[in-house]
Length: 388
Image 1 (cartoon, one colour):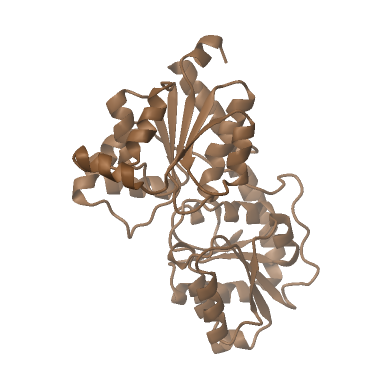
Image 2 (cartoon, rainbow, N blue to C red):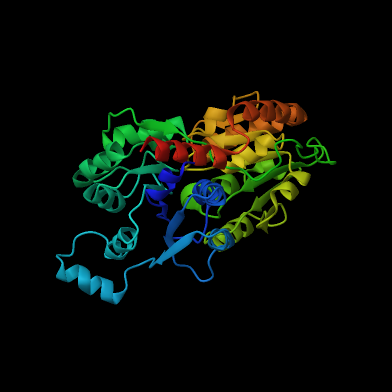
């Protein structure tokens, strides 16, 4: 990067996540920020204040990235100031805006874990004349903006130099929700945490002997739908088959999942494994079963396919954009017990073919996902800096 590009100001990353200290939506911006910082670009990041901070946020600080740790929720003082100013907008925003103004940015990157960038942040950028791009990681057709929000969301998307989505389906749905018509939207891919060069060995115990299925992700029925899997596997048909459902991950739905498995009499077959290294997940499991109600394009699907495992996934968001039904996995027509049961039945009928399907899955994902998505995103940001 040229010296004049560096002198225009920092690249400021804003993570809008407040409900969890970390998630799959944070990987892309974090890796891009690290790539830029290591190459000498001045990088700053505004993240929610958690105690302790996630290790990847701490790694950014260790790499020289200046952090603003904003309140997750407004303090009493911020609420008072906001009320005195008319009570509009997020009371936390004035402190964010003040922090950015002290060192005016060359570019702002707004990272949104949901459908489209929060208008508090885009309105701030537009009001100050700050260049920005945005990334949105998840959407659902059961969510729609309130009528008074549509113009705000549309203005925020159309005002971005580029609006990135992680799947074509999410982008198409956002166009309907926000009614934006500009051509500044692009698809971006998320990083993944498995080896691209060395797929996991197929489990020693064949699927025809004991079918080992993995559910991987946050324990949250609102989005991940683990309850649907448990109910589908509670039928009399499945009680007479030899299988295991290994649930990997953590979240506030943990106790409810335990209770549901116990009530179904399946505590010996549905096992909560907690957070597990990805490579260890695929030592024992033959297939990923993803019962999601809402997604972008799950990193878990990419990692399973990269590990030469087929996937059963619901027909939402980007799930079917990587999978070919009946070839590299199975698509359940909707996130419902009925359609997941039908999908699980297909898995059982073709369990002797799962290893070959896993190889097809790996070949497909290698064509679609770049080797280093974080570096790809960092390069896109560098292009913006040069163009500016």
